[in-house]
Length: 477
Image 1 (cartoon, helix red, strand yellow):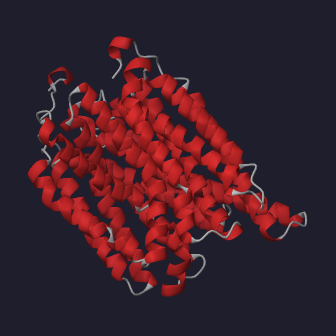
Image 2 (image 1 turned 180 degrees about the horizontal axis):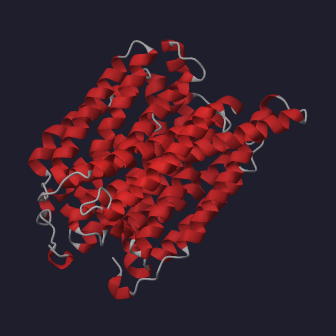
Image 3 (image 1 turned 60 degrees about the horizontal axis):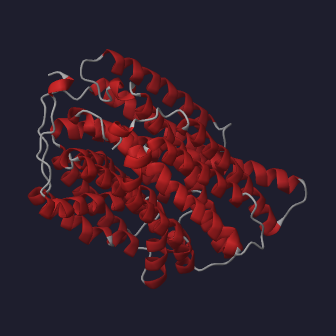
């Protein structure tokens, strides 16, 4: 079937139930993104309760992101082939059961196993969330609005995770941060088959060689950067994983270029704007994750914020991201995606650069609040147009693959970025210690070096955004 004859396999969602369909999809997306950070502020209590070692504790976070990022490409294509709603519901069910198991875990090993299983469920459901938005909301304004809200959930979910994690850890227990997924997950599993339309499936095969090389390649690369954060770049395991990941991904590209029905159709990258949007969805989370990770520690360890206060400190940023998600659908038709993406990227550079000026005496206002506001504005303006650029013009048969690549870029970018910035942090603290710096100042010197690196990465998003092809008024979303 030629691309010209491809049409969405579902009718536009009726207005009376379109809001419910969108709420079901966005709730799932929020759960998946939120779990990347919701455990952050609870780590000290988890370590105390389950007896984690200092190095083992990091796997509470990385076990989820490693599996989630590694399996996303496979999950995206599986949704295209086996049914997006089916994968959406099945993945949510796996994620919900894993959340329950994690909340009940009595040992460190059981909690890590539950986090791995959460990652599997998230990789099954995640790509289908974006694909279902694109194929359900086919009318121009409704699609842009839905994609902007999806972007807000994806970007703001990281900050919301810190807020929710702080609330639940302070008022109830760290286990509640996992248990809270259960009622929402059950609601999605029960409501989605009834209200979310199922796009038509197309007969095809899974591209097993591509699935194996792509999944193992992404997983090895994520593992290499995660391992480097704790064991360094000279460690044989780090170097072996990095080399293996790059070789597997090179093989993956070669396979995808030759197979008739690839896991990731390379035609997704033929459009210049879409390719640039993918790159920025890789670089942007790299810069933003440093803020969440290091600012959480700065507030708690240097400024002695409680877990609850730390969570609420990120509220202004989350509020701005969601506010911008309501404005972007109005701004896109007037200005097109390029000015919004460039402006958002510049604001992110300013926010990360401002954080590079922190000292041990920096107060919340303005030294922390100012950068949070800039990053909230930048994230809201910079990320929402990227979802539209990627998904607004992709053929219906490739929607799942396109969503899988986009979310892989975000997930892998944030994980790799964190590994790079932790490495920068370690190098900076060792250099400062050699110069006689000690105590809190030593930690802050490492953090400011990481923030400066994040600003440099964010500057890369400005350069990429400048390459966007301008869209004429008639062609704007």
